Image: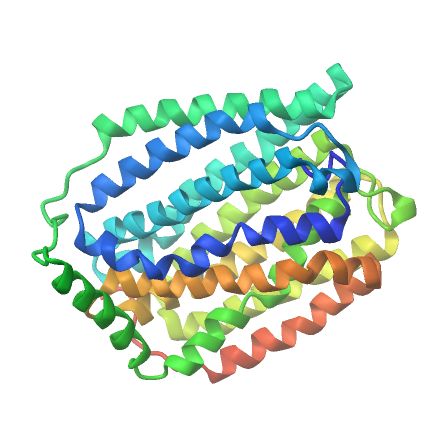
Length: 399
């Protein structure tokens, strides 16, 4: 959306990366989600809050274009609404992750991590594919970028509100989803402190933190510049695709490949276990980044060629990301499982936020071809942290 409105790459990558911040700092309130109310209550409450924020958003978009957007008062109002939505979404994640782990043993968690990701990816196909293609179509029909995105955002907000209403009746009520016995302020604060202390006392925590922060480094840089690269003109080093084509190639074909990679990754992890999965999945995450070096160097205009390269990269990322998610679950085992998993996902968000803050400026400095070569150099970091990792050889295998 911001790219269509003419915002420069450095600026748009910086501002959108700041939206990762709620996921980085969510451990500050994650223990309260564990202690106060049920996971189901938190899930539904946050969906209602997100629905309200999303319904406001289309009516407050800035009308300016280019660098002028960043000085518009409405732009900062828009950011505040995005932040409210992001904070609610991060809280929703805490509750939903706990909901997932309450009912599944480690083997089932490994087996279903791909399926779980599949439904997230299906929503991504709708959000990043169908909605983006719709915005592109409306932009062509109306010749008004701002109106096209307003209509698209209104549609997505209405759908989200309808799904929220459905969940108020359809969401299961597991017997294990109970409110904590800790009810006084002192008990809550004591439990809050223990979640952090026990996490940072875990064996191998420093190596674990390095892995969480650096395993996805190449993809963290690449994914932030993928859409701008596809949209920028050939003269600027991009591929000059329309918004509608980007919605199809990246948001639909790419996300579908990501989904398939995630499903196959979950199946492989449940058969091999986490330890044997690490190296195949690390290589799967890193090597396909070469496809963007090829695209930047040759700038093909054939949608089949571009779509194949995007699909290859996204399939590799989906397959490789499974090991990362399974390791987060593995490291969270023990007391305060939900809160510790929330801490792990905070490091996961930070691993995307920090590279994303500078990715646009690095790309503007290097140009697209050199930027993607830089991404390939970052793959060595993934290899390094994977080499340092130690896990139980039997974890995640089918019994």
